[in-house]
Image 1: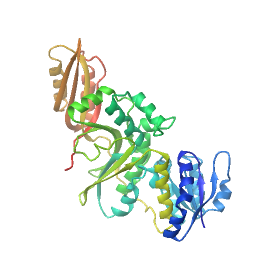
Image 2: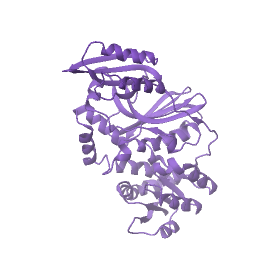
Image 3: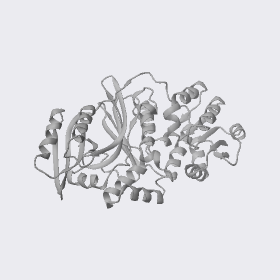
Length: 404
C-alpha cells in the first residue's frame, strides 16, 4: 500500500477522494504500488499528525496560505512527497517549498495549480526543458473565459453571465479572485518562474480583471473581427521579464482566439519550436482532481524535482501593446479630428475606426497600432480632459500576433 493523506475535502478534495479508489488498480499496474487514502483532514475532523505518520504522500487541497504552508513544510521535512493545487501558496512561497523539497530529497508536484488538465507544467519542466522560452501566454482561468464567451454569444451582461457560471459550478460563491485577475496572476507567476528560470512573486505581476467589460465592447469586437479573452503573459523583454494579466482582444488567427467556455489554453513560444499551444478544461472540481491524480502517479515514479533558479531577470513594467479605445463623445463636427490630434501628439497612430451617432452624442471605437503603454496612457488621459467627452474613455489591449 502507498498511503495518500488528503488535506481538504471541498469541491476538488472530494472529487479526488472519489477518483483515487476508482483508478487504484490501474495505478498499481503502472507503478507496482497501490494508492489508498490514509486519512482526510478537514476543519471538523482528522489529525494532521496522524495523517502524516500514516502517509507516503500528502495531497494539499485546502487552499489559501495558512495552515497549508505550515502543513506542507512539515510534510516535506518529514520526507513525504507533496502534491498541491494551491496557486496562491506557490506564487508567494514557492521558492521556500521547492527548497524544502530538494533539501529532503522528495517531490513537490503542482500540475493542478495551473490550467486544470492542461499539462503545461510538465511540458515546461520536461519536454521543453532544453528550449529557451521567449514567451508564455494563455487563458488560465476557466471562469472568466466562460463569462466572456457567454457575454459574446448571448449579449448577457457581466453580472448575468457570472450568475450562470456560478449555477453551472464554473465559478465559486465568491468569484472575486477569478474576475479581478488575481487567480490568473498567481498562475502566471508560477509559469514565469518555470519558463524563465527566475524567481517571480505574485506581487510582481500586474493584473486587471473583467468586471468593467461592457456588452457594447463585445458588439464592437465583432464588427472589428476580434475575440475578447483574459490573457496572462510572461515574456522576455531585452534582459528583463514582463509578467501581466489583462483583458485583450485577439484577431481570429491567434491560437487562443477560438478557446471558448470554461476551457484553458497556454501558448509557449520559442525560436527553437516556434509555437506550441495546449488546451483543455480548466474550471471544475473533477478536472483539477484529475490533474492532481496525475501528479500523485508521477510522484510514485521518482525521481523528479524543481531545480533552483539560476537567473535574476528584472521585472519590466512598460511594454508595447496595441489598444482598443472606446469613446462616448458629443455628436458635433471636428470631434474625431480633436481625438486624432491628441493621439498624434503622443505618438499614437490609429489602425481602424468605427463611428456611430447616438442622438446628441456619438460613439468612437478605434484600434491603435502597438505603442508603449505609458504613451497610450498619457494619450488617454489627455483625451479624457477634452470637453467633448461624455464619459471616461475605456481601453482594452489588443494582441496582434496571428499564427498560420
